[in-house]
Length: 218
Ligand SMILES: [Zn+2]
Image (cartoon, rainbow, N blue to C red; front, top):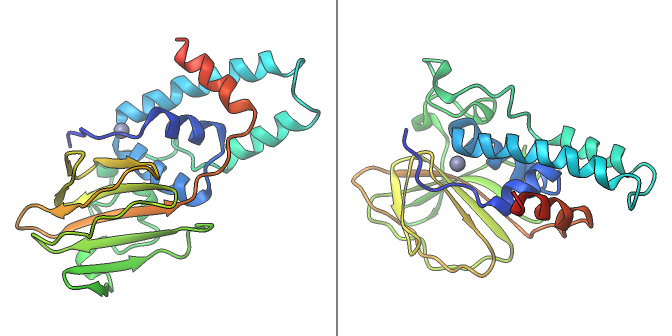
């Protein structure tokens, strides 16, 4: 699997700092389970973050803040324990999805959403104000142009789509902020199946700009 579209650095930073919700974290971890490039970035950021935390502690952090942040990091899905997707021959699904879905995507009980668009919600994953769901888009069908109230992550599991940003195939992730409008179209003769999370972004905590500085300063 060759991946051309990755998570943005600020999304990865927020993931490492523990400021993304469980639902965003889930979709990020699913991409990470497929993508060595982003996994390596996360490792680098975790190293830098640990140094930044040590430096920051005596100056600005209130008592208990470090424990709180470390607790938030623990809440993230554990990438280290997520082996590559192809380690179990019976399933083509990325590891984090396997507990929620049948091995064969064709066995999913899809619900009709619009002509040529079916959906399968994943309410087990806490989503705050947004939602985690699968979408199945029939060949040639376009999702009407839309913006977002918050961030949107779209991970392609099967097939492909094209939009204003480019062409997205299996493993690729579209990492869009609320300023982006787009109009994806399933662009082959195969159904396009995506994992999508939409949500309003959480406010950065005061630590984030510091972490960002360390990363950008590399
Ligand atoms: Zn990636």
